[in-house]
Image (cartoon, rainbow, N blue to C red):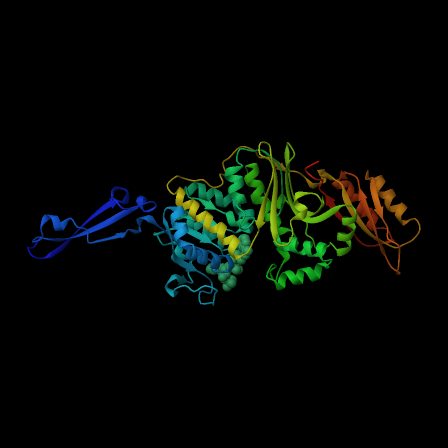
Length: 487
Ligand SMILES: NC(=O)c1ccc[n+]([C@@H]2O[C@H](COP(=O)([O-])OP(=O)(O)OC[C@H]3O[C@@H](n4cnc5c(N)ncnc54)[C@H](OP(=O)(O)O)[C@@H]3O)[C@@H](O)[C@H]2O)c1
């Protein structure tokens, strides 16, 4: 060391060894820099002149997809930065955002240096430890996630479609890499239902999981029920309020609910369920007239995602369902979601809350980030594909037994009702009640029948036969009934 020249002497110390650092700073490594001059006294050398936090304790995060949820995540990380730091015990720093259109005007401003077109700038950056995938769709989201895991990064996603279709492969890759793939935002938006099933309820066998998991269809059915709107009017309103996409097929045809059912049932029953085996039916055939008739029978119509343990097999199905007006789920209206469950120890319970949207979903995504931050270094803890607890097959729908609501569109001619009743009887279906409104105009009239319990295949055969009668003018509508679990 040359005499008379200023030097710097630097030591790394855990904050816990230095007085004056309260949690969460105590977990950090701090760099203390001392100016060192040969002519300074020993005492002066020990006065720290500068210290700053090393990036070692900051988790660097990259976001792919700066759309609705991505914007919410950026906003939440910014607005609640201090709270998240306190709770995670580490700073979560968003260092890169990739999007197909980085220049697009958004509700939140970010520095242009954060933005890129190229997701590889995130996937290949060795400093980034967590990748958030929020682009949606199967490809290239799947490739991005696999690449992130391969590069040794944790992944957070809200992509239910991708998890439902490729979950097994993705979780296997996560397990192999020893990194976590967290997905709280994929079901129920802001409701911590994934964490609920994965952690709080993990000690239970589940008899039933039954959920309203698509806010768009629930909004439509609620409007039809509470305001007598017809389907098209309610759908148009949902679109105008931003509750439905321009292409709402996934929502109203039940596919989005089926994606979510796969995720919930896989968590609850311990093996990744094959999406293709889930029975799916949407709400597009339901009319406001049906809503009025079912009300007369004491029921409400909901699009339910249902999983049930049937012993040797599992039921997994999504369809419009009649539930008693007293059922817990009957009062879940608008865009709200609710997931009813019945565990052998916990008993019956309900998760309820906002099932989608920028802020609730961002809340779930950031919850996952904090979870990862707290667990880092503790190994893999998302869904294990090597669990052997159950490998039950999905029950063939033909085996399902339930009561049904049937609406026939029939010419008002003598003997038609008797013919319908006869065919139902020949197929082992007995009638519980009938509504046949008086005819006020020419043409077909609705004949509404509530049946007792019968097998699915019997209903199918009976309806096929009835729909071939010359007096039947439209395809018959059937809605399955789910009796109250309280019974
Ligand atoms: N929105 C919700 O309420 C909600 C709730 C629960 C879960 N989720 C899930 O969260 C995910 C994101 O949903 P979102 O509503 O935020 O979607 P979004 O608004 O469409 O945002 C997606 C963003 O990603 C961009 N993008 C698409 N492909 C890309 C690529 N290859 N590389 C880089 N950027 C790409 C899109 O750009 P372009 O616009 O140019 O295509 C868009 O800016 C989806 O998986 C969705 O299912 C959403």
